[in-house]
Length: 316
Image (tube, rainbow, N blue to C red):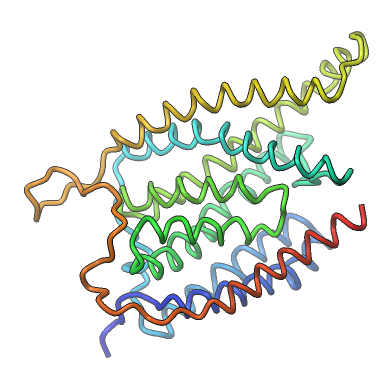
């Protein structure tokens, strides 16, 4: 039996729902016992393994669906700086959402615990950097983005990025991952390889972790500054923060656009053009008949997202 080409959107949606439920039930339970072990079990056994088993059992080409293609050093360097300049924008977007939520409630985002020692930092680098970079990319940029590609690359990137944000089940950390998903999707198609998006995901998480870790090392100095200076009005502090982040985001957006435009894409030897065309909104020629999409699994995940965050805000 020949390997089938690409999973259907409905297959991907169903897997997305099942894995989301596993994440919130089994994954959350294990993480309450031991966070690091729980995260590893969640990523490798509850996210990565089911996707690989599904592809194998249904005769899909794992290498083909995931686009496990070679990437050049030059491409990896570009991805690194693309993510570095994307990060301030994601932070700005998350901060805006947190500020708006703060108007209506005192709830705050707990986030992942910051490592307090260098050994803990190295462990966290693997758990928070390497692991999601592999497992979550296989699910979202590998399985789901390829399934949705029949709708057109642009639509596929936007839809799967929103689903990626929902999968975090955290209102405070929703818009940032959506933006990151869009960047990773663009990089994935430009490099024609999941290796590029895996590397980008790793860089993003590791960069965030490193900033948090080294900032924590200077926390005493920051406390002294706060104690020895007059108290700043919280509203003014928020406005100043928004202005600073906005300016940094504008500069980052300019650099990001430049890097994406000049990204060293894979050479298409079958075409007279030196590079693949920019991401188009058109439907691929080999997808003349698009399946009737069952949005019920996605709808259920959205309802779960609303319920989980609603309960979190109510109990704060």
